[in-house]
Amino acid sequence: MPLGDPVLDLSHRKFKLLPSRVYDLIHLEKLYVCGNKVRTLSNSISQLHGLRTLALDFNKLEDVPLGICELTNLTCLYLGSNRLMSLPPELKNLQHLRCLWVESNYIQRFPQELYELPNLKSLQIGDNRLKTLPSDLWRMESLRGLWLYGNRFQTFPKVLLRMEYLEVLDLDRNKISEFPSLKRIKSLQLFSYDHNPVDGPPKVGEDVFVVGEGAEEFMQIREARKERLREKAEDEAEEEAEDFFFPITPKTQLFFILRKSITIMFSITKVQLQLITEPEINNLIKVCLPPVLASLIITGPKSAVKH
Image (cartoon, rainbow, N blue to C red; front, side):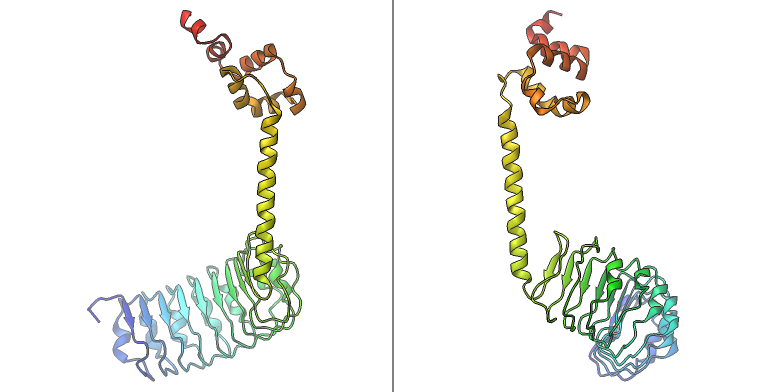
């Protein structure tokens, strides 16, 4: 690695321990140690104060090394495919953490220590052993993506309905036989429910992308309905335009431009607009425009030149 390089990739080297000289590389910002046989890390890891990304996926960690919890500048921490059963309370020290992946471990209880991470936006905790979620999970207001696939949920965790800022929710490969309407999750953009014992998606917002049994047909029907509504709106707009027939003059063209303002200002109905007379158009133009411009429109350009 070149001297001063901020990125070090030691993945797939069959390491059981991290080489001691790595702990002296205080300039490191990203360290990848994936796919080794690491069981623990020296507390000297805490010397790497500038570290922002640490990837320890596919190792043999049974506990999160406490030295990691002193890396207060970390924004991304990847601990997937290890042997973790829980997360330490000290994890709350990582106040800048935005992305935490702990998928494919042995976690049975949702780690409420994560409540103390105000910037956490992405949480991968799929392929664990969760059966329930805490009722106050809604406190994680910064969370935007939550991956809960491959756990042991048999019913939909109702607390998720209170997480209105969630954009991505993945509940694939659980045993949920019924989903409530998810329209309360106002920010939801993607919902995945594949490989659950249901025949189709739940009710979701009009723009939510869904993945699972019956999702493709559901979205096709939804898009067809949207297209019909668009066509109907266009037809109504054309019909409204056809309802108004005036001789096409500069004055009447301006009248059409001002029509929306006129109807608002004077509470004139559509029917009344159709019956409006030439003098009345002149009066409305005088009210809506500066005097010189109004005179130009009403009397015509030749008259304006004489002035």
